[in-house]
Length: 308
Image (cartoon, rainbow, N blue to C red; front, side, top):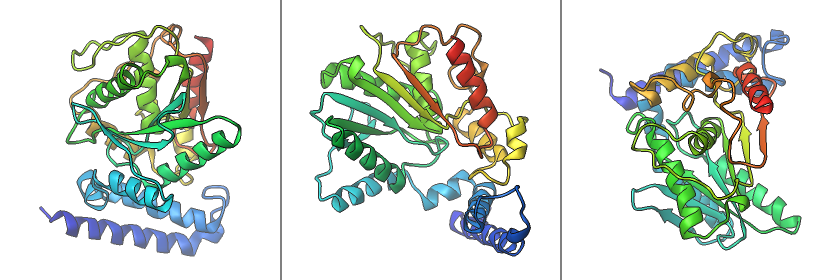
């Protein structure tokens, strides 16, 4: 077996070769690639890297500790003091905005449950906090650095999401109606799973039961990871436009699920009719880009939720 560093180097070399070839043929891509030549080339490199590198190799490049380093670097740039929360079970979360603000966003970052929060996550949340503040509201944001696969398998991440919500309500004294769940990709998947658990308690004892005395203020789902199959029309039509391929997403799903069978909690599109009817949340926003390979299942899930 090749050393991880050598394997990663080979994967990067293959991805660079793909990017070089893409550069040559970019002028002839028609409607099958990125909106600009630069974006088309960058996307082809990223897709190639995700396809050619194993999760272990990618985590050599982006280890779990990368999230904290990114956060600390961001706070230095903002000339602010880092504020890191560590729960008794080891779950870690990073504060942005005002911890004493009335309203709170609990944010779950994307990364296929395999990669840590990136600098872009923190800069996005900083911009969000600034925009809210400019409209006369102060807000606190907790970015949850949930445990990553394959070291930690599902439903460990759902357990951590429940514990963070409990912490916000029971320890910080936040009202559920002042809390918004927010996430992108796998993070949006986790936020949706948390809502499912609140309405339909998960059968595994590792996930603590928790009930609310009022609905959450809202949930914002950006590009939620709602399905693991690759047979959607958008998986084919957007294969050359998205950051990651449907095949790579399917591979990552097998890594974070392990031996766990797909169900309503970890694969939202499988939820039966009526599943979304009693979610304890006032409003839900679902957003997705037109070039995503999972656009079709996201739209299907959103329609089911709207009907429910």
